Amino acid sequence: MALKLPVYLDNNATTPMDPRVLDEMLPYFSEKFGNAASKTHSFGWEAEEAVDIAREQVAALVGAHPQEIIFTSGATEAVNLAVKGVCDNVAGSDHHIITVVTEHKAVLDTCKHIEKTGGNVTYLPVKPNGLISLKELESAITENTILIAVMYANNETGVIQPIREIAAIARKYGILFLSDATQAVGKIPVNVQMDSIDLMAFSAHKLYGPKGVGALYVRKKNPSVTLTAQIDGGGHERNMRSGTLNVPGIVGFGKACEICSNEMAADSKRLSKLRNAFEVELLVLNDISINGEDIPRLPHATNISFGYVDGEKMIFEAGSDIAFSRSSACTSATLEPSYVLKAMGISDEAIHHSFRFSFGRFTTEDQTNHAIKVISKIVKEHRHERDHGHHQIV
Image (tube, rainbow, N blue to C red; front, side):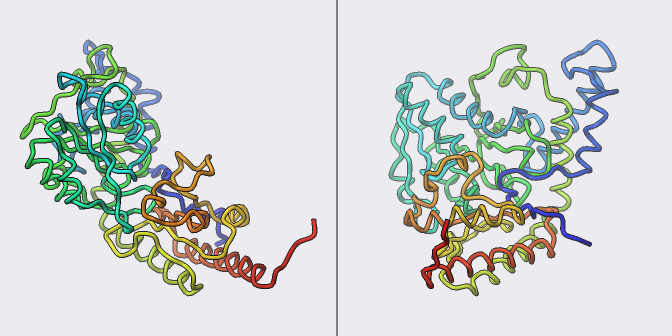
């Protein structure tokens, strides 16, 4: 069978929806169109029941109680609700938050907002492998620290932070711990109880569900977390997030989580095999390094620096064969070197020819082999041109 091109290797940006998820959603656009807040007739009850089932499916994937899941429009909104909601809930304005320089912009920009309103934020550096120092985290804590926000796994490198150790430090000082687990949930086992996470943001479209729906996990006991709502209205979602629920999206999110619960272990095993084969084949080319390679990282993702290639040109030349990215999708429109790789001490030049490849549930071995061939060819051509001073006459 002919390969369908381009091969999609940007699953950290978004994933294609699983057809089983779409099948589950379709009735809720047409015949089952009720508003989950309509309490007086069967259309509303049907929608409410569908939302309840989805809430159970989402909660089950992350080890939460269904009542601890607040549906949002995505992980960015969930992060905003968590950070601003915690700050607004604590009297005074000299709040202190600790986060990390390599967080997603959703966290960094929300923290910048807190700084503008009088709060203080410490941005922890990372080591060359992308991990924070637990010692530095602990010594950054002050009597005003109300929140520690550390992502579970990085969107550019796939590097997984020592979440349980971070949570233990937060617990020791009675500080709430928020984790942006957008890249981790559905890819690796994440359990809010075992990981002692108090607040956690994640999204449907990163785990083969629809775009425009996500969740915030809010711990109900030990400790019981209270947030000030950021969107006011009809008191939906335990008064934490008003607005008519996106029933088809929520149904799809639930189904996507159920599929991940059942298939994640097998998916991870298969994808890490593809990812490792991809790395091994490309490392043969020499002058290639894998960013964050010697520590735990997501099984399906890799961030590779290719020495002596033209980064712009490589993306352009590979474009019709492979879809992959420079850094994160949210910043790929800017030509700024990746702040994540910069924070790991990688030079601007190396960042310029560093790329993120992320495999997914629908990536095949044939597609992976095709990507290896195409990239190897481009890298060899670039190096040949460089070594032989080849200039094209325009």
